[in-house]
Length: 368
Image (tube, rainbow, N blue to C red; front, side):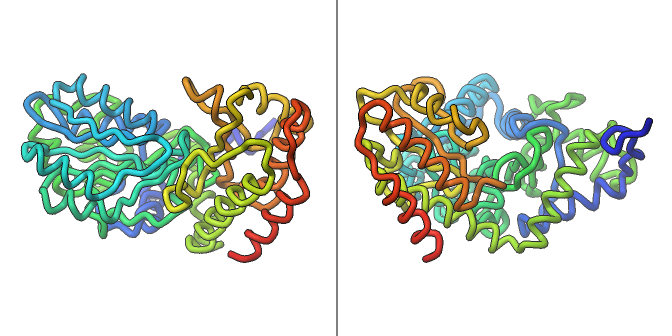
């Protein structure tokens, strides 16, 4: 018996290359695009291990947990790391990055997360890219959460390594990712004797065996289902229009913030300033006497499919996250999530106004 998801013809090199071109179109980039056959941590680690090494100095901007991971990888590569950490309830500024570069003129590599879904903040990449370009450092950007949800222009912003994933705003699977690579980045990796080679982490292998070979033969069998899903995501974004998709995510973020403030019950936006809030996820601080993980568990009792999670690690007790990305960037998902949180708060004695929250969500969404 045949199965539409199992009995598939092989994915040809030509179709793989076509999907890469569509990713390039989404990013408005003329740089090489490599689709990696794994979750986005694969190209992120490959970029760091290819672009940094012993004797190099890296500026690692930490606005959430992924920035901490990047710092660990950079140190493991033998790089001297300058960590620029800012409170997770805010964003880093171009001025802060510029000052760090001025204080450490030897910095040759900068790593930054665009939008931190885990903490709900987003960083001003265009302005940061300008100061990094003036300094002359290689610029790596984790845009896994931001792609599809807010403007992302690696060429215009001077991003040398821009990593994306399909699992958030693009509404796809976690098992496929991509990276755009500038000519400067290729040169840096080629000159790095410690850059991964003959390895699943190696971007240089993809360049030699795929790009430079004319994209005629794939280095290995692609993750076919994930590639087809990525293609479907790109088709959906192209059909709706990227600006429409981004506007939907911006509306979801604004409506969630407004609805949470109207709900009351002690919920407060975790990211202090709305301008610093990511369009993919809104993080909320729960009352001091309330456990966030327990609150989320209670809220999910009636509908386990709501896009609600507690914060990770040390934030599990104090933070709730509404993941309004991809198919959940809708007024229905936002409203239902806040309604469930309101019911859970009321059950532990907190005064909430769910009608006011529903009204705020509807009015904010319609006003965008």
